[in-house]
Length: 121
Length: 107
Image 1: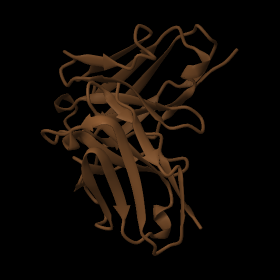
Image 2: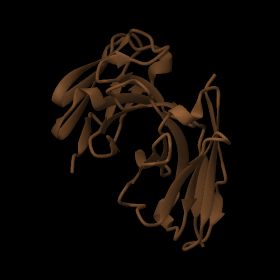
Image 3: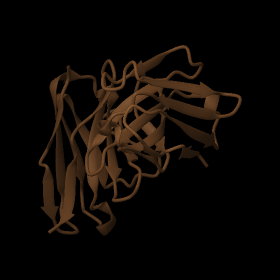
């Protein structure tokens, strides 16, 4: 069965950095686009970034562009999010999600349980 | 930039009733790239519908999606106790984008 397990969240001061990881299992990781999506406390979902299956293409939300970097290691079945210059408004649960492989559509068909990032002094 | 507006913000219904949730886009979007998710408290979202009307794996047939252009609808034909949750629509244009959500609560 598909499993996505995030790790690396925690408390960090404004301006600090954090690296999130997502360990994937139960599917051929290298065949799928992957994404990070976040949810601030009590708020809705906000897409953060996605990466193509071979890492050749990445895309970022304007709110994180230039500060966050998505990457993946297909040999390790792992997805990463390097977060720099963190701000209070980056406080959220960060979800790792798989992009469906159904041709001609786009949806996030499997999600991890999330990891909480808190940016506070 | 496309904006997705979900309405109503909160829907108060009883088990067994029909729920109709709306997702309106500020400009036309491809129905192929319109999805719906369910999120329960403390849980990750779950994909319900993709391509505006296709049910994801394991989703009961009481959930259905419809619409095109700027107006999309998620319908739950008869609410079960486990269906009370928050529902989000999502589209993909140049980037993925989520609507603000509709909470379906027990009346």
